[in-house]
Image (tube, rainbow, N blue to C red; front, side, top):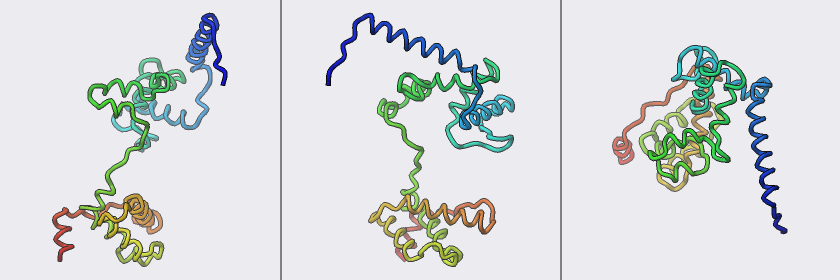
Length: 219
């Protein structure tokens, strides 16, 4: 592969072109409406935050909370609207502020620098996992069994109770990593109860302490 050698003049013009592109991009932010559905949705959530004065709970509609993503970007958009007015430029500006080259969430990273290890600040993007696998192997094991192996779940005929019980026992014993499967099965059953059985929002049974579970197993 042949390496391309640029002269100092050529590098100068390329840098100038990049600067012009960035300036034009920023200058034209208010020149066209919010066309992308995602962009317009987040802009409206920010506008509602500014209008209602509720900076704690983002709302996708009045009185309807939105927990689809962390609220940092919505706070930035609402703050920009408070300073610059409710317009396309203010709605889009925080997106540019959150980027530094290929580094995302720049403001958030800088805000917590010194509080978090550098390995956390520079790691690749990941979701927001919770230790569900550990919970259902310990104190929430009985709650999972109560949901997945009770009478109406069996009568529904969707899940194989023998296979489910084997999954729960193997996961608890550490023979199999079944956290994701148990999570999916519990959500399926709770969804059935909420929307098919029309029982409304479901809550999990009370979790038993680990010591209590161990005593029951020994018995």
